[in-house]
Length: 91
Image 1 (cartoon, one colour):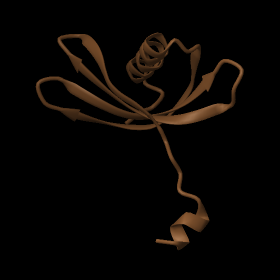
Image 2 (cartoon, rainbow, N blue to C red):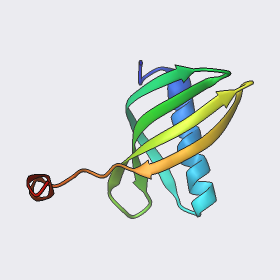
Image 3 (cartoon, one colour):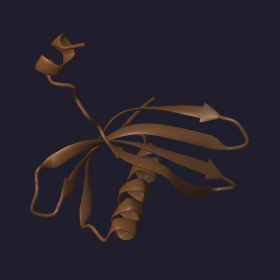
Image 4 (cartoon, rainbow, N blue to C red):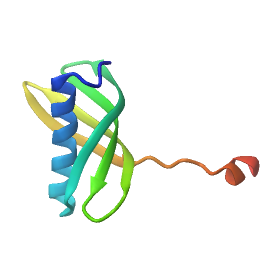
């Protein structure tokens, strides 16, 4: 997937704006890191985004957005959790 594609960035911006609106947060899309699509009755986008919250550092999120009949619907918006080296050793 071309993460620089204008439509992919539009989908990413929608996800950030919608999540910010729902959670009453001031968020700003920094960049689309990676992504993939799945086609069914519409298109489902699974994207990894770097997002900046006002007054805080950037964080990575995994988002799922469904596009059907030219309408976007935010399905999930979750912070990427990276396991630390010590917790990986304990497994």
